[in-house]
Length: 374
Image 1 (cartoon, rainbow, N blue to C red):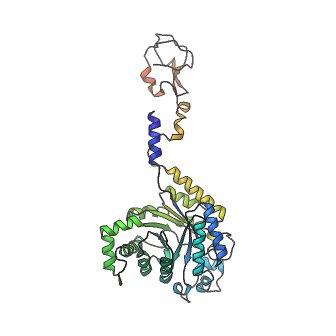
Image 2 (image 1 turned 90 degrees about the vertical axis):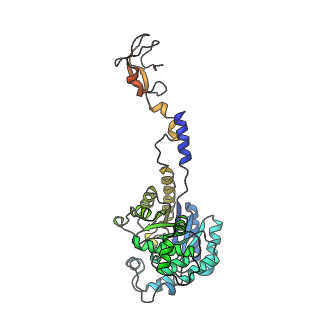
Image 3 (image 1 turned 180 degrees about the horizontal axis):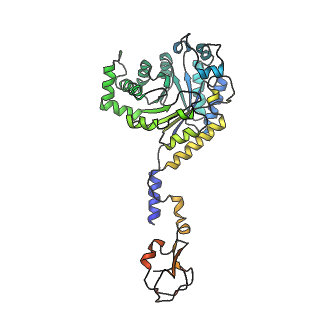
């Protein structure tokens, strides 16, 4: 009965919020709304919580002199500029509304990341987003960070390429955005004061999740550095997660085991498709496997209390041992090392009482292997 009670208590204490899985469609639609809608379907069927896209006006984000990243040159060639590449990957305003409807129909949350102020405003004015996502490349773009925070809704902040100092400054601006969304010309003194205030810290803890990230596609395993999640959690007291760019699904599962509350991962319909991010994305079956693995690892984490699990209580009697007659014992005969031993099943006197029983007198006759009774 004690084991059953402990097991029930353990079951109650293991109930926890589900890890939030963001299926990052990004620009893997290649500018096609039909492909984008198929990506929503794949994310929903995989069991992800959110299907996320990217919203941008290319000319507002990228200078005509900007070169492609090395990984982009490998996947799309070096001839065209970064700006020309990204122009082909933009979704129209109408496409966004269609994708929101598609997400609603498939019972998955719609989310898109704004990469410029006009895009942030477009998302804010036209969509009832449950949260905002600030990408790694924008963490030092403090005007954009402030604009995102001024909406007042929760924020998932990616921290690729960032130091703890970069993260602290972004969090300070977020705190100010939450506390004083109408501030016209924020100053460092303003956002530092907001960050230091009790109300600012409360809002950050309530609304912000930090995602560790390695901004390379794919990210080398020796650069993933999952322990950085612990460093950020210790430094800022905020929930943490992982935006993963490594190959495969091992790192997201490991991150959940280390306490990640949010996992973000790129996926595609076809890893061989033309475009900058397909090669470093998961195929549909891999996305589904990742979500299943995350759910399993999350469920397996438990609460840390070392008590019998409900499923193993019924096996106690089978796996543990009781005191039995090693040889025939007559009534009135003392229990000795020669006539007493421990064997399965565990339904009698527990084997832990072996030394206690030595020297006591048998109150009845016992056959070989018969359970000893009090």
